[in-house]
Length: 209
Image 1 (cartoon, rainbow, N blue to C red):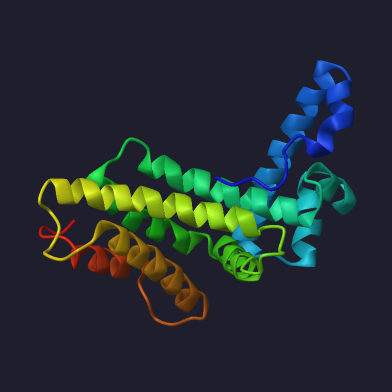
Image 2 (image 1 turned 90 degrees about the horizontal axis):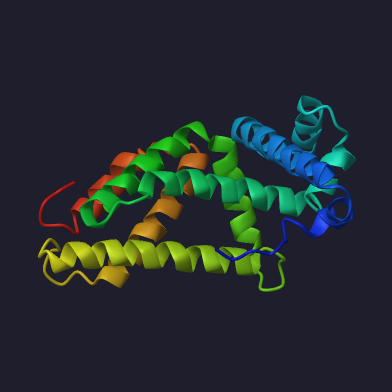
């Protein structure tokens, strides 16, 4: 995963002090991040949401963004936590099991509307090569595409793909469909993200998941 902001960059002063102070700062960051994830999942990103995060951890808004070197770093940290939670569902899974887990990940997004909205807005802005989050999203898409490609390759090695299905193209199609369905869902179109992803994946496999 690409990293733009060094987690330690805003803690240099603390690191120079006693180990106890550094440990306290790390714990504080974790507390802020958990509060941010919960708040963004519920409300999305607004100016008031940062104030809500600050209140929930007993800090000022300035204190919150100080721990993450600015608002953009906080947003990225929340998105990275979203990816980490999704990857827990994929841990140790290969081939068909990996692809089935993608369906479950899409299902979990239904309870994280604010975070999905945050991701969609920031990823669109980051298509600008000069955007500070550009490299992060490029690396993220490449990493996900590679992992899904490998899963399709593993299914193909077991003769589980339909004729003419190329694992790389299948992975990109799956990723593009997931991104598109999230955008339609955010705009209140009647889609079932999990089941629509399942249908797409099944259209590429001999035996459905």
